[in-house]
Length: 374
Image (cartoon, helix red, strand yellow):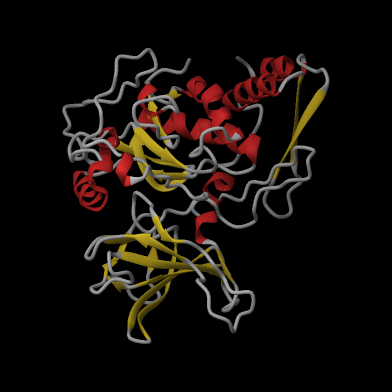
């Protein structure tokens, strides 16, 4: 389909409402505007995804990587000005104590979040940036990384990098110290704008929201159920003669929409196209909590999550064909989740039957690559 044909198809749907997308552009450049009109939201999404696939709506790789795309939908709502695509310090994000800032700076409160992590577990950089501090504060090992004008600090972390070092997304930068920040094991994470030492923001917003939503432990099955026969089952499984979780990096491709994450190359390309369509609709790319998981990472998650995690060497994440998502997709019934159910198959991504709300193990956040766009 040509770009002109795609635009004509979108404009032919003009009826009772018009969706105007205002895409941010680099400083000094005029903003790009695309009008996609439709009689229903579903038709608008269909026209929009077609336009993105054909190139009629341009979402730059820089905008997606930075997570700073802004969208106007006529409601006055815009995406946040801060990044939304940072990696969480450890995979399988689970918050054990939330963000609870004080009403006044001099009062006590919780100026960050505590994220479950085991002693000795690797901690990773959230984005491309520079190590601002690596040392001890009040007897606790602390690591701070500055990225795009924002500073993320982590306690208790034994740094493996030094102040001034450049880091890339997902790079191991230290390990959880002994003793950890919490008795059962955790890392304290705080985020603030560079130069504003007393004003902390909720770190989860930088990771795309509360991406980890876990069933109560008492409700968890002893082991994950086998995938049932289903028309929407993905193609996740062995490929290329590789073993689960032991696929060489040269056989994988990075996600432009989620720096630091990798998938099998065809799945990565399809996901980036999907994320661009999502960004055009909601103002920010899809937040990816986890994508490919090495065997070693699967072992750590099994130790940390117990029966809530797949047996190491069996996870579909280990084939580079599954993702865990945030951005509102991780909650059943949200507009974002509904949009994904309607549009992800256009890009070859599906929500497997077992993970659906009425499935055997509901996981709103888990999506898999089917290998073919519908």
